Image 1 (tube, one colour):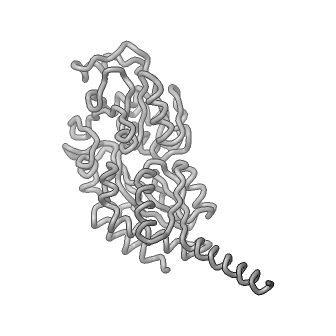
Image 2 (cartoon, rainbow, N blue to C red; image 1 turned 45 degrees about the vertical axis):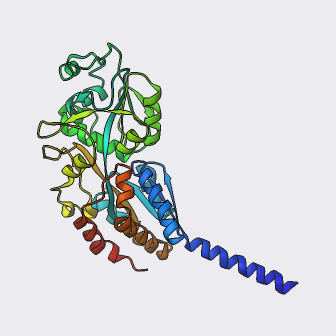
Image 3 (cartoon, rainbow, N blue to C red; image 1 turned 180 degrees about the horizontal axis):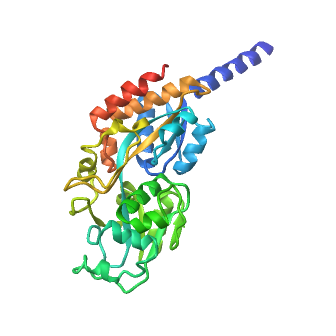
Length: 336
């Protein structure tokens, strides 16, 4: 009987070790959550390895990977070189997406409303208060807009999506840059907050005459009406894979440590002005280096086999050269 008990205990220990080796954990940005979830599902089917990813916002992801409580972190706001060095982290991009303004205005359909960065900045800093404002109606003579107060919806948590959005607004408006600036959180003077892309999506759907900013996949999947935007070349464009690709086409990805570039306000007649890569953070001093190596395997698989899954969800795979640069400069630093 004792032998059987010991054998059973040994068996449980082996199972626990095997289970541990078959699961990796990550946390962070909600921006890429839909595609990470789909990649994780396909990767488990292909390899048996579970990728457990929690959509808690970029700020939470940075905190958790800095504390080494997850195997990888995820952020839409790339860390600067000094922060990567300070926290002993590696950083690389995983996929491209776009931040899009979405509205809940009765009778206004997707792609009908035209906005500019300057107008968005004045809506979010409280200077433009109504949909009937002359600056908005001047661009939208064929769109019936109500004489109703605008409710801006913003991220209530520390958010890389907010960092991207405020970068764009600061590039579009000197007064916004001076008064509110760029950050994962800012002191919004008007509006309502929602946690995560999920929370902003839900709030915009519930609040008439509201406007929010979310990752494109959330807008598409939740059938939110997104707007056109005027880009740096003066053209009004809609968000989709071609306009995201156009924004990324001529970017110098190796100009910043950890590939931490911005793709907002890029030149090009077709470029969507709030295009953005999203990033993965890995520890150089992991508690379990095998887990870090497994994270590398997962994202290398995503580069090789996850492209169609990404495009099906309205994300854009990285340019092939960027993937190769990540392999040579980041992946090869991690040994299994």
